[in-house]
Amino acid sequence: MSRLALILLSLIISIGLQAQELNANVKVNTQKLQTVDPKVFETLEQTIQEFLNNQKWTSDVFELEERINCNFILTIQEELSPTSFKADLAVQSSRPVYMSEYETPLFNYIDKEVTFYYEQYQPIQYSRNQYNDNLSAVLAYYAFIIIGKDYDSFSPMGGEPYFQLAQDILNSVPQSAASSNPGWRSVEGNRNRYWLVENIMSPRVRPMRQAMYAYHRDGLDVMFQDVETGRAVITQALSEIGSVNQSYPNSMIVQLFNNEKSAELVEIYKLGSLEQQNEVIRLMSRLDPANASKYRAIK
Image: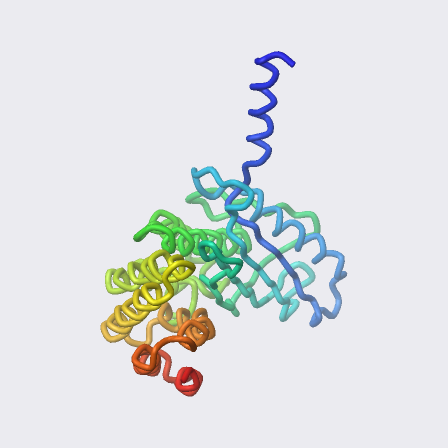
C-alpha cells in the first residue's frame, strides 16, 4: 500500500473513532397512556437518543471513551391531546474516577414540568439562540447542564460556556411559550429550570463550583494513590459548600448536591479516621439535615 493510501486510511479511521460529547441512554415510559399508540413513543425514544448523541454540542473533539455517560428517562404522565403530553424527565449524568472502574454522579434531577407536542417521525431540531419548540429546548438545556457539570469537574469553572448556553436557551423561550410550558419562569416556584441555571451562574455559588472541581480532581481522582489526601481535600470542599449554603440558604444547587453525593460520601468516610468521620457528620448534618441519620451511621 502506498504512503498516501496509508495516510488517508489513518485519517478515515481517526475520524471514525471521534464521537460527539454525550453517550445518552434514553427511555420513554408510557404506562399511563390511554389512547395514543405506544409505537409513537418508540419512535420518540429513538429520535431523542439520536438528537442527544448525534448533535455537536461543543467545539471540542471527543474520543468514544471520553463521551459523557447520561440517562434521560421521560415518563408520560398525561395526554393533553393526541399530540400533546405532560411528562416527568429524569436526567442523570456521571463521570469516571481516575484509575478506577467507579463512576461518580454529577447530576441527578427530575423535572416534573415537561410539556411537549409530538407527532410520530417528527424531527427534533436545535438552533442556537432560536426557540423551535419546548421539547428541543428542554433537551438541549439539560445537555448543556450535563456538559457544564462535567467540565466543571475537570477544570476550575470549566463549564461556564455551557451553563451560559443553557441560560441562553432559557432566555430564548418566548413569553407566550413560557406561559404555556412551565419550568422556565422564576415565578413558578424555586425548583425549576430557571432556578437551576440561576443558582449555577450566581456569584454566590462560584465558591461551590470551585469546591466541586477540588472534590473531583484533587479528591476522588487522587484516591487511587493517596486515600488520606483525597479524603482531606473532599472534607475541605464540603466545608466550602457549607459556606455557600450559609450565604445562599435553601438553594436548589446545594440540595441537588446532597441528592447526588450523599451515598458516595458515606462510602468515602466509612474507612476514615474518627476525626474525619466526626467532621463530615458535623458538616453534612448542617448541609443535609434530612439525611443526618444516614451520616451518623458512618461510624
